[in-house]
Image (cartoon, rainbow, N blue to C red; front, side, top):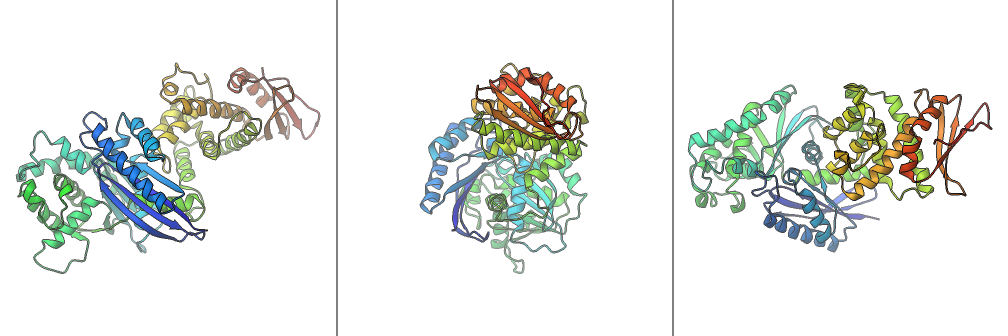
Length: 528
């Protein structure tokens, strides 16, 4: 039976909706696409706060899009928020309002995750063959740049440069309501060049055979170029560098009122289009891109659809691994982690999670189980920097790695769970734990306790312990049932050292029961 899903992209300038009917074989059809300009990022970047009126507009549109999705039969809504929300100190207030008033959860994603999703949405309808392409998306608050072929990205980055953000930065020195002088437009370009220099330098290490634009800014610039071009010949949506310079000069030559009447330019974009043109101008110039093809309706929300197909088993990835696991392994390997130990601890963590659920220690589900797995895989990556405080280094590396496929909340839960795999248990005196909301604290307490237990079961790094289960005894205490191929003394010592902290987290006394293949009657004392 087909499933209907709504995909919502809450951007800095606009909120976009895609409702799709997905068949059991992975085929899908678009039911409707909608876009509303809300200017969520209006006046938000200076003090890092979303403005009340802007939130009101965005929440209203989100509620309308949710109702529309459900009218079309959507059983699920997948929603993400980007630059304006992720930079805002009051993002939790906004996402809670959307949850309460529109009835769906919003994931706040990193810039690199945004770039990955845009690339996935764009490449799905292209035939690149052996070519590599650069994909540029100029949003209201950020610009995403990705280089990839038909099957995988090779480079990606997110710049804190967007049409609304850049306009706001220069609002006190440049009057965007009037015409701009060549010197003022050059100021914008110089700021972009400086801000993007590091990203451009890295991007130039890769071959670029073609360029595609996936944002409303680039679509608009291409439309203006086509409708104001004196000669014909260029294909629809194709914007040459020469045409971009011509369009930028035209936009700068007139005030806002006249700008709004330029063919191809919508009135609601007229005040920010010059900043958008300056961003594209410098990126095309510095990347030596002579022309860029604008792709209508091939961006972030379409990437959400492609990701949804893969996550539900209706789509496939080239490596057979999920985007999340590939990203986690890439980070671990970059930090030269002990991969075998990571996988052993992850296996024990999953066994303990499942059996703890059966023993009524938690009511967590598959999502938290997956986060525990990734925290287990990465818990020791901080040893790359220093062993003595490696749990803190692990937290920092995970928190700042821009893991792909995860939102900010998931990344924080993974990092904080890894932080508490050793030393002190979570408590409100620790700033990393204190920063979490009540629900997240409860999750971290349980996941970090399970991770501590799992890590102790591979202390010798020799896979001595082969199985582990938590069982509720008749008198209410817990039994940790272990099976081992040989002597597991190191593991038992580790459990004894961590026993009190683990028992406190579970709220029960724990007894260890060890079965060895050479001695089926072996046992061990309680961990405390």
